[in-house]
Length: 193
Image (cartoon, rainbow, N blue to C red; front, side, top):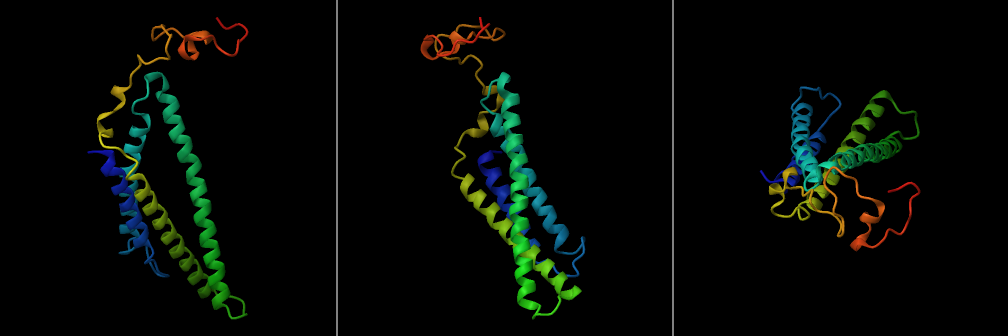
């Protein structure tokens, strides 16, 4: 199946799971009709997204550069996750603080009020997360061109080199050979042959 269909559909499925999670309440359990189905939708949606994204990120890359391409995708994911977590945590903290301020009436907040504020903050964060993931689905859908599913890693062309480079696959080109149009390299490296 084409990543052009899988990625936006998976993101929308995850967004739907997050939107369903906004129905959480003070007494919602894990196996309740809210939490477990929502988590399953989120997991299924993101599971559908990650494999095609990694495949697209490494398609058309030569065997020599496949590790770098995969590492770049991994780094982006590892940086994006804590930024997203920090953003949603900030949104949730602000929502909890404003809920307590609006409902405490000048007295010290009770345990029930703190629990209600926590649930309210979760709900606001889930709505924000659903909006962000929906926006990602809408942004990525037009970016995925038709025919990307046919690319695959096998389509990577290892015979493409800068003009003037005549090395075989197992020989590293010299600095001069890497220069564009066969012109001499701008920088001479000491010891480079």
